[in-house]
Length: 231
Image 1 (tube, rainbow, N blue to C red):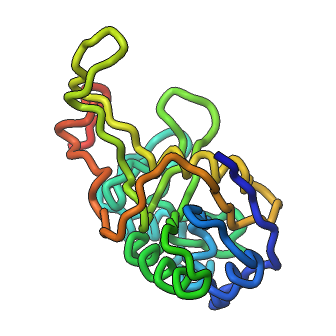
Image 2: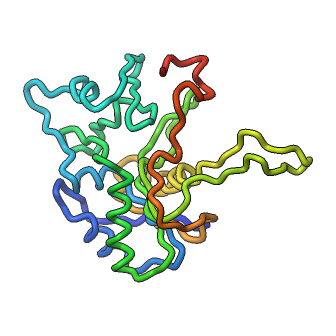
Image 3: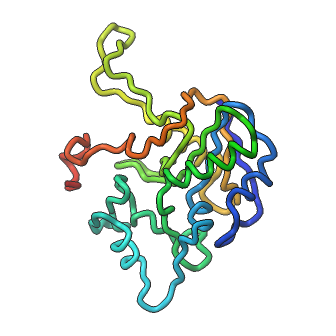
């Protein structure tokens, strides 16, 4: 698998996202996945809020989140089925304001896929919208898939046998999140100005089904529930 980040011009509020991608990625190999950071998707959708009287991080978080808990470093929230800091509201690289998550990252992925499929004329193509995410009890962030389209986001091993012949009962691989982590590592978290990554030869199954909700798990079924009050 090869992952290559793409440096672009500075993307601003209201700019055309498809033009950003096609002008900086001249062609894609058959079977590629195009990863895009959620910030540029949000800016293309106008999901930027100016800092002004009455607009604070807390007010935006409480408006965006399904549930909110106060923690030492941030507001821990449940947003779009994801346990996330500050409901995705971000001040980093936000040009003095706040950037929110895309309105519907799965729908956005599908729309981007439709445009790129027409432009690049490849049969097998994936689109992935990424963000960074902190893991419990680990320093640092990894990548997470906010939305994707064009490939199966999960590989299910339940019922299959391991090397010792034991049937697996729980194991599933989050393909979308694994790809997001690789893309986020390549794109960076600071001033790199590389909001796109092209992933080639990834071990994925391509499809044209919208898999919104495929990776979600109910709080009552979550392995971390005994140590977190999430539902």
